[in-house]
Structure formats: C-alpha cells, structure tokens
Amino acid sequence: MKTIFEPTKGMIPVDTSYCPGCGHGIAHRIIMECLEERGSLGNTIGVVPIGCAINAHHFMNVDMCESTHGRAPAIAAGIRRVHPDQVVFTYQGDGDLASIGTAEIIHAAHRGEKFTTFFINNAIYGMTGGQMAPTTLIGQKTTTSVNGRTVEQAGLPLRMCEILSQIDCAVFVERVMLNNPANVRKAKAAVKKALDIQDARLGFTFVEFLSSCPTNWGLAPKDALNYVGQNMADYYPVRNFKTPEGF
Amino acid sequence: MSRVLMKGNEAFAEAAIRAGVKCYFGYPITPQNEIPEYMSHELPKAGGAFIQAESELAAINMAFGASASGGRVFISTSSPGLALMQEGIGFIASCEVPLVILNVSRGGPGVGGIQPGQADYLQVTRGGYNGDVRVPVFAPSSIQECANLIYECFDIADEYRNPVVILADGMLGQMMEPVELPEARGITPVEKINDERPWAITGTDNHPERNVVYSLRLDPQVLENHCFDMFEKYAKAEKELVRWTDQGLEDAEIVFVAFGTMSRLCVEAIELLEERGIKAGLIRPISLWPYPNAAFDKIGKNCKVVISTELSMGQMITDVKTAVQGRWPVSLINRTGGMVPSSIEIADRAEKALKEATK
Image (cartoon, rainbow over all chains, first blue to last red; front, side, top):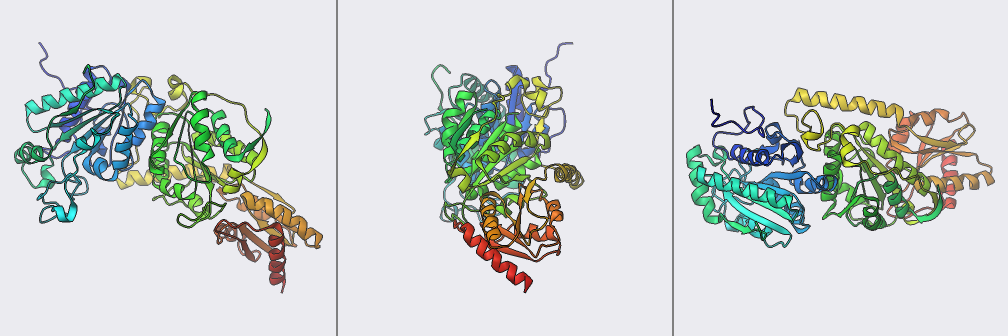
C-alpha cells in the first residue's frame, strides 16, 4: 500500500502539553519537518525558552537544552562557538524574547550570530496564566490589563521584526502567521529559507510566528485563529522584511 | 615549565588557555579587565573562541550553552558582575554542567569601589542563586597558586559536573609575581566531545540516546530526588575537596584565620608578634566551601584566641565560629571597602585581642 502521510520523525510520538488551538504544536511540527526534509535531525542543537514551550524538548526529536528566561540567544551563541558545523536554533515566546530577553536577542542579531531564532508571538504570557506581554494588543484584556491594554499605562506593542530588521547583521527577518493551512505552508517556507541561510553562514536569521493562545485569550480555538488573522495581522504586518541576495 | 614575571590577570588567562579552554566569555569590569583583553587576542590563536558579551547575564548563559554542548569554558568577572551571574550559576548547577568561574573581587557593597576586597565571601560560599545548590570555592593567595588552581579546577568541574568558583581578591589580579605556567594540554576536538562528556548536546548522530540538558522538574518527587542526587555529589566534595595550609598551630596563643591576600599579611604579622614575644599561628583556608573545619582540630593547648582576619565586615567569621565550636574565643580583625591593613596594624590589633581574651 502506498503511504500518503506519515508523521515527521522530528516529533517524538507523544501527546503534547499544549492546549487545543494553541499554535505551538503547528510551529513545532513545521520546524521539525523542515529539519527532517533536509536531513538535519541528527546534527541539530535547539534551545527552548521559559514559557509553555519549555516542554518542547519532550516533543522535538533533536538534542536540546533549556535556558534561563530570555537568555536562549546567548546560550545558542555559546553552542555555536563549540559547534561550527551543526544546525543551531532557539525557540522563544514573546515574554521570553520581547520582554526579559531583549538584550540577548538584539545582540545576537548585532553580532550576526549564525543561528536561527523562531519567535512565537501570541501576545500574552501563557504559562503563567495570561498576563500582559510587550506584544499584547491595545485593548486586549489580560490578567494584568483587565480592562484592556492602554497606551497610557503600557505603551504600544513591540514589533520585533521591525526592530531586528534595522540591524545590519540580521540578514533574514520574516513574519508569518499560523491561522490557516495556506499560511502554515508559507510559514514552513520561511522556516526552510531561514535554515538554508543559516547554512550559508550569512548572519542572523529570524522567523516570527503570529500564533494563538485560546486558553488565555478566552476564545474558542476557531475564534482564536480568526483573532490572529484579523487583529494581530492588523498590527503586525505579515511579510518578509529582509532576505539576502540569492535566496 | 618556564618561570616568567606576569601580571596576575594575564597569568590567570594564560593558565586557562593552557588548561584547554575552548571558550571564554567576558564583560569588562575592573579589576579583571586584563583577562578578557588577553583572551580576545590569545585564545583564538590557541584554537578557542572569545566573545565580548553584552552583559554578565549573557556571559554566564553563553558559558552554559558552550559547556552544555561539551566545550571547556572559562569565565571571569568581579564582584557586582558575579552578582549578576548568580541565577545562571544556580541554573548551571541544577543542569549539572561544568564551569570554572574566576572572581577577581573588589570592595562592596553595591557598585562599591575597585580596590581589593573579600566581602564576596558569603556571595561565593552561599551564593545568590535559588534552591539547594553548593559551589566549590577555592581562594588562592599567590599568582602561582591561582594559576595552578585554574588549571586543576577544570578537572574538578568536569568530575562533579558543577560550577567551581575561584575567589582571587583584586590584589592578586593586579600585582606581578614570578609564575611557572603549566603545560598546554590542548582543546578537545569536537568529534571527541561525547567520549569525554557523553551527556553533552552535540547532535543525536554523535551519541546513542538523545541528550537533553534541563533543570525543570515539575513533579516534586522527581525534583526532590534530583536534590538528593546533587547532595550525594556535594557530600563527596566535602570529603575530597577540603584544602588548607597552616603554620605554628601547636603552641600558638593567637591563631589567625585568613585567606587570599590577608593570609600573606598575617604571615608578616606573625613575625612581628614573635619579636614581641607572642606566639601566633595561621590557618589559611584554600577551599572556602567545603570549609576546612578539620584544620581547627590541630590548634594546641596554648591558644587563647582565634582571629578571623578579613577584608570585609566579617563574613568568614561565621564559618570560623562553626569550626571553633566554642573551644576558644573568636575575634575579628578587618578592614573593608578596599582598605587593606598593614601587617603592623594586624599585629597591634591581635595583641590587643589577646589581652582582651586573657583578662
């Protein structure tokens, strides 16, 4: 019988700890599919964040380490110095990357670190129970902005792709979204491209995923996907910011 | 081995290179700046990698990544920088990853000053990290001893899979002394990493099982078991890593307890007291954790007072009192904030303490 589908060997065949409708599972899978398709599963080292995705090392079938909160890019820089030939990536959420870890992500980009960062932006702190993130939208209700985020109280949401694309040694910067199958395919293409550019050692590579957190947004999974496609994509333009010549 | 005259900080950096360091990550902070400077031009020549980190937070985490993936890693900082690294040290210990950290310490608290100090005693022996962690700490009193310790501590860190701290007060970093540097032993090639460190994350093609370096244990029973396991290692360390030197304890009336630069001043003070007809001895802890309690059992019958002699407001004195166990009065001679007493000042204050104790 002809096999028409099989799960990627990049994912360990266990149930994930993620909620129904959460984007982490999709992001994990497309990253791992890309690594498998290019034959990189055996020579990849990944760094997981603090946040829901700290559990990623139970699901991603590659060598991994945890990190202190926000410091994954520093850890990956250390790994890269020991392993010049491996594929190295960090996987980070918005509290981890855009709040406590801003210095590390900026300076990883600034040094042109030859690894890829996958940034899951779901506009909220998931693991700690739904507090406001730097990427929380204006008006969005969280447990630390119960009447909705205001500019006066918390400023405007931070756009990481726009910030990082200003840095010369960040050579590939793209924002994608995980709200429907067509966009998931585009997201996978961005992941593949980031890894190819990492292989070419041209500089720092960065993919931001607009993702959903139905549990802490208080939305049904389907409504959460609509929120990504409408509200989040309104503020966070989904596009390529930077690609090196030849890619 | 060749004998050369070198500034402390440069000798420490060279000793680390010869110990086979693959990576050094540093952030400028006085009085240890010669170490990142030296590493930036010498480590790449030896086949290693240098990054000037954006902060001490980044430096300690770069060190974690490099060591978790199997590289031999050295970092250095000074007191406030070490305070910034504390979370990382506890995390690295919890992940059971080796690391050698040199603290060329200065006067505190806060930003403090840049002159030598020993007020990091509690910071290095008790730490600012959360949770049940112990970190072996060694305190050299000469450039030679520090260079030897740096070389050796990589093996200790590897054996125990734990961070190890060397506490060298700023005086040692900034002065010059003759030093014999150890032989270079070379960097472990990347393809040999898992032979030496089977747990290291190098890519699953390089070892039989997938490797994960982690700290999170949400099940309290699993976490408790992890702490029990770590404390088995620490119990072994308490047996095997205790080090000190002593002199004249058998018939001493005064016993100084001092480490690092202060111990050298005490040796001079002991000579001054001898001229005054007073017998004094010295316990010089080299391991600050585990503390050399056994040294105190060598103190003889003539002892009237034990004096903790420190460049702080009195931090080691707690460990001295624990080791003394009420057998003799314990007194403190100290300067702090970067002030260093003369050997005459120490002798005078010791004589006064002896009179108080025998009143």
